[in-house]
Image: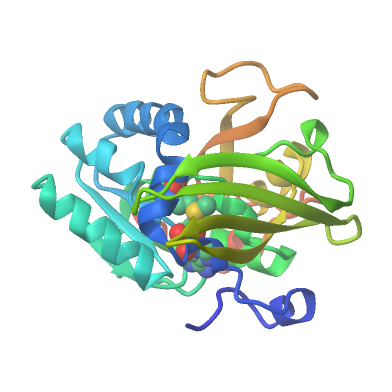
Length: 288
Ligand SMILES: C[S@@+](CC[C@H](N)C(=O)[O-])C[C@H]1O[C@@H](n2cnc3c(N)ncnc32)[C@H](O)[C@@H]1O
């Protein structure tokens, strides 16, 4: 499978950054209940804003499905066919009508616009460079009506353990889809220059007396709230709320997440220096 992102990606990681998403049934077991606050938050937002809604990097639809179950007109897109196939099966078994679209968020061109676009599961952190974050925001802009809403969350750098931990530490334990007990452990290496955490996860189980270990790598970029605000503003997004978690707590240094809700106002696009950006000066016609 082709890896996501721009050419810069190859210089930073020697994998496609999708290894964590190779086993969707067990992804759901590991992540399932943890996504409930996100499902409530984005479901409430979707009801308030109204459809149609697009979830970018929707994975197996852990949040897409509960949002759709609230009667919201929603589409989900992801680069991983494996994750999407699982999402499709689950939606069919719940008789939920969701449009699933395979594609790279950075080059997506659906030819449709939505009232709300959101990303969750910290999927924003998969965009590892300034160029990728810019391309993502351009892509969101191509898919939002003027005045539409973009929302996403990302781990707050100030409350995370952004250091190297080369020794394997125990992380988790669960019973997988085949009934095997899986012990999960991992290491981390932080690239402070690029602000990228490289996590390696080891999932060990014993099946029929045989030990198995699945190793997967993932790289995630950490971006602080000030930088996010500046980049969003340069792309014509006006931040309306910035919370410290899905319960809308205040964003301070201890908050685990940065949860951002912003509105797309193409004529408000400003460079970080305050000068009008290309979006404003090129005379691009607002969508609505
Ligand atoms: C942590 S998962 C989150 C999935 C889902 N939103 C959730 O909350 O469970 C990140 C997802 O981003 C997808 N992804 C990574 N890079 C992508 C890209 N460039 N375009 C679209 N999807 C991408 C992965 O395939 C994966 O399904």
